[in-house]
Length: 342
Image 1 (tube, rainbow, N blue to C red):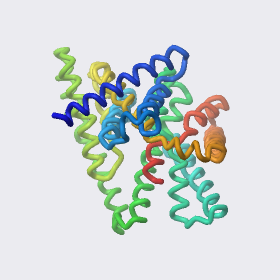
Image 2: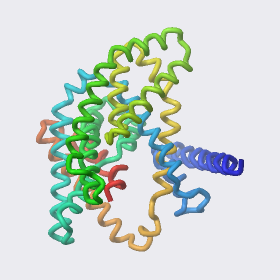
Image 3: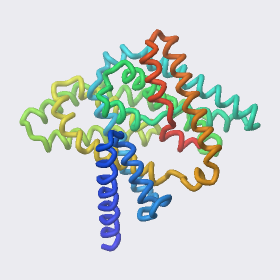
Image 4: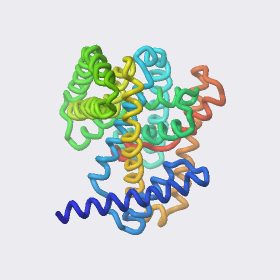
């Protein structure tokens, strides 16, 4: 009972801190993401120490990322993804490759690192936070804008590339066997095939559930499909967020899209908020405080470098200067996979 009470107290404290700081940020025109992260910093180990960094908090936050990608998938369709293929496998691939190679060369030549660790650092820098990008774009009503379209395309490829980087990371620790890449590719193909096979039945089920107009049924269906696809993908060593996105696209092509989207939004916003609070509790402020000039310089270099790379690559793909510049700024930060690779 004490454990349950402790969890409730921590949850109440977390929600209260988020409410206060998100409200303040909203009143002064600052994105709500900043409020959530500040809440994590204030109540986390780096602040007042009221809540410790925990696996449970991270796990709850990951649910938010899954629901966020599922909701994004509802806005897309396979036809739209085919339309974006040039940006996903062109712009996205070039951005990841150029960033990884550039950072790897710097790590090898200047810091004398071995090739594999240097590549992993390059991959970590190349990644961006899907949750943060989508939250910023959604807050600005820019998901359908030119920069929103480009950012989403790059983020989708980054999720695919993250699987390869994580395999490389595991191989360094001996966790991956020689045929690991083949296994993952085969599993990914099987998952895609299963989603295509389930496409018709899932749309029929969604339409049948939405027809009575019962919001609880739509909520349960959305959560079951989003979390179920994520669990299957994670068990297969694939990206849960990417699987949730694909599942969302399947439902989004049917008639029940709006009903499912409306009912999942409250869950999505709550869990995504917890995700950013968790990020705040993990920030090593003591390291930043002890070496803040060096940290700030490297942050500025990474932000400027990633922005410039995306800007140049997007321009080479024929995008406007304004859209390319804004996309570069949106993708300039690091992501969740960056923390996993380092």
